[in-house]
Image (spheres, one colour):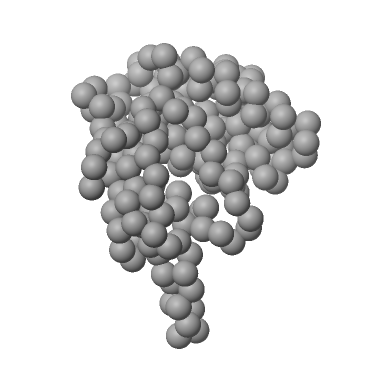
Length: 189
């Protein structure tokens, strides 16, 4: 495997067995993504986009082929975070607790947790809702929580699986603009 990019994928194949039948989800996929690139993977429903993201996130194993994600010298942790199509907020935690979850799991210092959580709550426009629970939020607000949590974790790579698919057009546009603004700000750090 040559290491030309931040993410290098060579010959990646994934086969699922369903009712004793082989279902080819990915077949011999090759690509390279450079550090700092913003990449969208497009294709029809069922073509393997989610499977590919799940493999890159370490949630699935490929059937064959390989991939490599280069970590920077700064060794940020985690290497990658994923925002799913369905809202991934935890119902018994407040907005603030949901955003801080990854940082708390990594035992980050309290000041870092508070600073990053508050910064990203502000960025996605949820500061005044930080003490609410997910059942008290709209779908768009829940997705903002997921995005804030992913960025607060300070990953080198952010994987997103159709994070705005379930939203109305107005909220989809607003969140896309917010996401791009946050990405522009953080990619320079």
